[in-house]
Image (cartoon, rainbow, N blue to C red; front, side, top):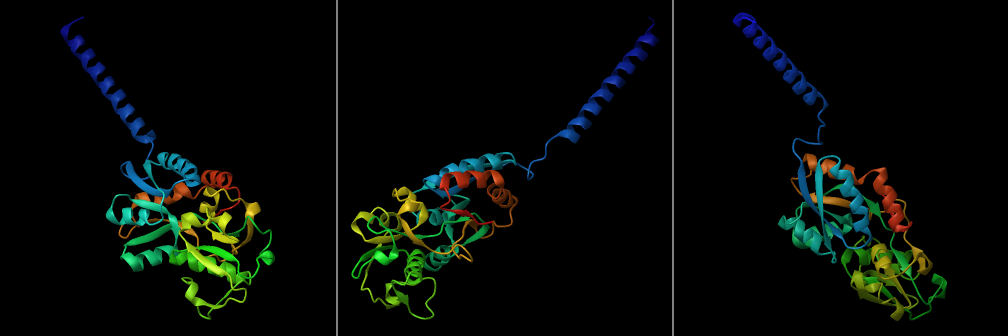
Length: 278
């Protein structure tokens, strides 16, 4: 082979190699998966301990498919997740309804906004001593949660069942001072939301948030009344710090919750005591 032929052959091989490389790059560029946003994102989300941990394992798996890594931070006290979010210790939380957040904002000046609904847990009246509301006698002791939003909610359940009557025009943040008629002379015992269900044996009845009812070992068989689901103002939601609500990861976070896979796990875990609200 002469030098001219050898040089020509070398150039031809180089050209062919360049063409193959170019084709490979083009193929990769065409077939590479696209994340939900420009770069993978890692966030921390505050949730309450218990059944919601199982639900959020599915949410986390859904988010991972979209390039969003979620680390759940578990709390045991309702007052902690908003404080952590305000301080920037977490990026979002999912545990509260609007009346509760409104009260927290008023009290603490938090800059927190809802970005997507999750579920509603109709609050119920439970009893280990009575099978029906009509069995609750005069002078009975009834426990209610003592935080402003849930106390008002609980008192409305008692009003709906004819046990008490609230003053006309009373808002959703009603307290015992707003009771205008207590013909049965029931004693309303205000207790921490996490305690009222566990105190059921010492009470004639108690209005208990559904998540705390489950933690307290109460079941649907112990529930003698509950608030209506239709037009319920107590739908829970995912919340973020004000100013973050339009960021791409927030949309991905919400969609990672609002889907059939998460709903199936939610229904399995909560056994009909909660209802998806999106």
